[in-house]
Amino acid sequence: MTEIWKTLPGWVRHIVVPIIALIVVWVVVSTILGAVFGLVSFLFGWVLRVMVIVALGALVILVKKASR
Image (cartoon, rainbow, N blue to C red):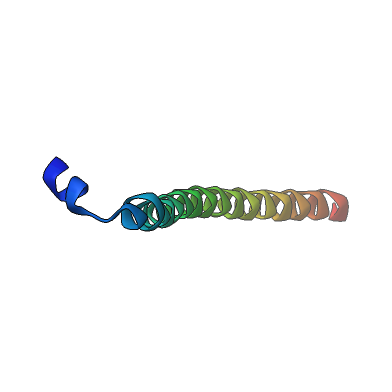
């Protein structure tokens, strides 16, 4: 591997390789962040649905008690 690295021209080693490394790091970080935000939004949406169902149930119980 060091032979391949040493045979590369200087401009490739100092310019192209770091740019490619930055692009790879950017893709990996954005994928991880996307997965985390996707999971958080999924859980938030699920909790919100449960809260709406519980609120509707409480409303039905209150209306039934008020109608007696």
